[in-house]
Image 1 (cartoon, rainbow, N blue to C red):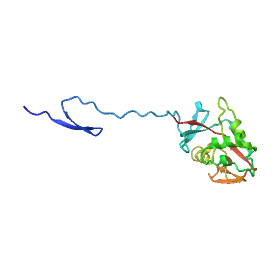
Image 2: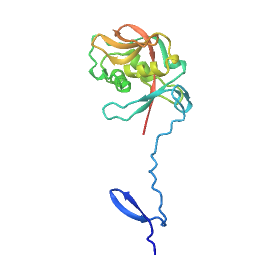
Image 3: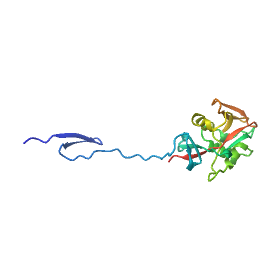
Image 4: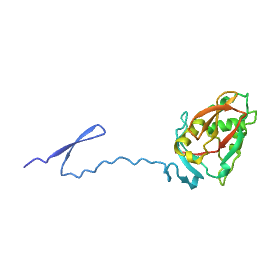
Length: 195
């Protein structure tokens, strides 16, 4: 009588001999749940009220989020002051978190910050969670959806110093600082957390 051929199988570090005539169930990797993204970067996302500019990495262990740029004309203002010249807004210095910067300027500050207050109070359709983007969020917008903005300077919500705040041009992508009491464009954005 001939021996039944066997195959060596290793599962989780344990070795087994399995006869070739046995029914062996194939091992499959577990499915990994992902957050559905019904649109591509640069496409209009109707359920979110704007164009998907891309994925921003959450700062300091906060969750990642999709950056949404509304196309409604009400989401942009042609000329507005950043405000608060001479006032150090230490809680509005994040290069990545425009929402936190906007809240620090529009809600927590003792002085007026017209650009941040405008974005914070904005309501378009069913959405009222807008904010002034931080400088790195503006960089993402320039990289992925520059056609949505004029080829001009836009305020960020990121403070540079007591007298200056960060801006970005959508002509060349350059970022610079300017007097807080100057008037430049502003564009409101919103976010959708990736869960």
